[in-house]
Image 1 (cartoon, one colour):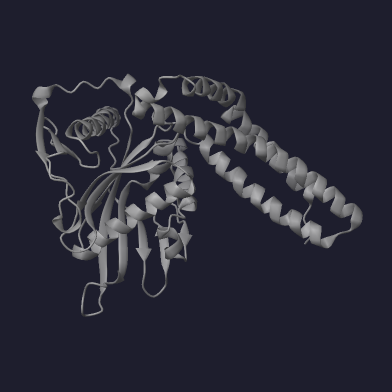
Image 2: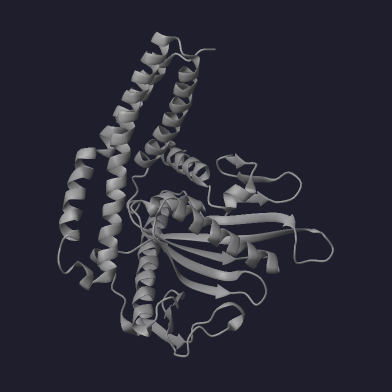
Length: 371
């Protein structure tokens, strides 16, 4: 059946105008101008952390603005392409227009997802922690596979990502890892990845060729900003310093530069060993600790509200996605039903379809009437 281009393009224009009204390119342009002014300051790089935050935010804002303007241009170009092809009765050009139409639909859907992120911290950068669960070497190997998956995802989107701490397993993989993704809406985007992930495969570490099931937990928290002012008294913190180590316990340096902070009232533990100095590692650990305390405070407030309403439901920690690497190769999200028959591509960072489906699912849950 031939594509009805005028109708399809009109529908795209209508949806785009609604999305454009929410994203507000005028506001984004004003933000770009403000960030450009900050980036032009002669003393910008006196504070490297702030400089990186400014330049990263500027790059992301420019990208967002270019995406909106580019979409409008592509729509206009498609109309011209279709008009020329129909006048010349050119089937090849119409086929080319069909491909571009499909591409525009996909890009529009991605822009629409951004409008669904309206949470209090959705605009923030994200701190992600991956912990291996039950499953021995398979679980620690799985945790490392997930770490690579998310870092590849960030790389594909050109989002700055930095591993802050890694605890290596004695055998394969990692016990845990914490990394930071510095980009607008990184938290709103990645927060739907939080929960328990399950891997089922023929274990490469066993001799019986038996199927092994292993688990890993993903935690996502918003990165704290200086304006949040989460006060943590020194009396509530236990500080341990130790030498950074790599795989197999090999020493990375010969000084006690790694830092472990334990928040005594809550038992929250944060370790950092990525930076070169103890002072830098302590500052990075404190920032993550404050982020976790901020999130804990909000979770407690939300739980109290739910308790008063008589509606207490566990929202995180349940199994949310399964990865099958034997027989039928499949990755399936148990909340949304989103699937991929190519686990290799998923583990290489192609997880946007899962993330977009998760954001839509979360919004639908939020909008659902309470029983």
